[in-house]
Structure formats: C-alpha cells, structure tokens
Image 1 (cartoon, helix red, strand yellow):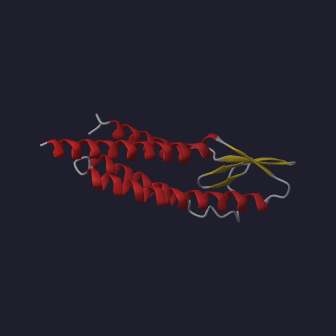
Image 2 (cartoon, helix red, strand yellow):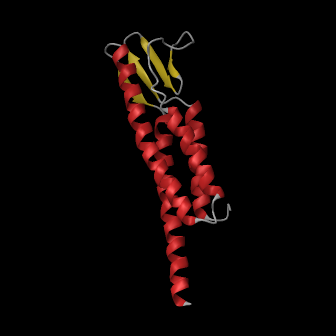
Image 3 (cartoon, helix red, strand yellow):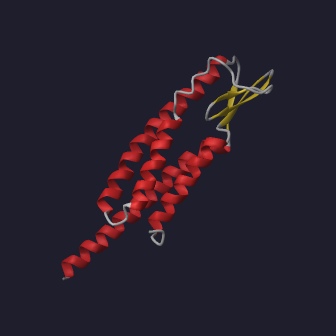
Length: 153
C-alpha cells in the first residue's frame, strides 16, 4: 500500500540502492591520475577494470536488502513481519558497509600514495539506511496506534 509513509520511505530506499549500482563510490587519486571505484571494480582511465582488486561482493547484501524492502512493502497487512524484515536488513547494511570499507582499503593498497575521495554513490546506501530507519519508526507508530485503539474497545 503506497499511501502509507513507510512504504514511501522503503520505496525511496530501494531506488537509492539501485542507483548506487550505477554510480561511482569514489575516486582514488594518485600522481599518475585518478581511478573510479564502482560497484563492479576499479575502473581504469583507458577503460576496463584493474585486475587484482577484489570487490568483496559487497553489492550482494544490497541486492538482498532490495528484496527484503520489497517484501516489507508488500506485507503491509502484517506490521510485525515488516519490522522483522527491516531489522534483518539493518544487519545486512552493517555487513555491506564492512565489505565496502574492505573494498576501498584493498583498492587503496594496490595503488601507492593514493587518496580516496567519496563519490555520490558512496552516500546513497547511508541515506537508504536512514530511510529504512524512518520506515521502521513509522511502522512502530502505526502498531502503537492500533494497540491503543484495541485497548479503548
């Protein structure tokens, strides 16, 4: 049900995570030039990806989070199930942030004297996490409202 604010939050979270696949997470700058960190590897200026840089598959938890958020949107009749799905996605956010930091450190270690500058794709998962938190807060508010009405009856 898209009329509820938590569904809007979850839908925006999904859109941001999907956009994060196609945007640059950051740029590694060294004296020779700059390389873009994307979801699928370290992109070189000449085209192609730098071999030997492990992506640590950090985008797999993002895919699972997208599926969980979609399931939470379509299980609007069970608020407790929605809360459970969103809580599980928080664990996956933590896992993906840890894997992303490993990816950035690994890419930085392959290039000597490089500095990392975050790109727009770096911040989308963080904003998505905040939107998921706001959705969880709204679901709890709805659940508290339903419980208070049941007490009145």
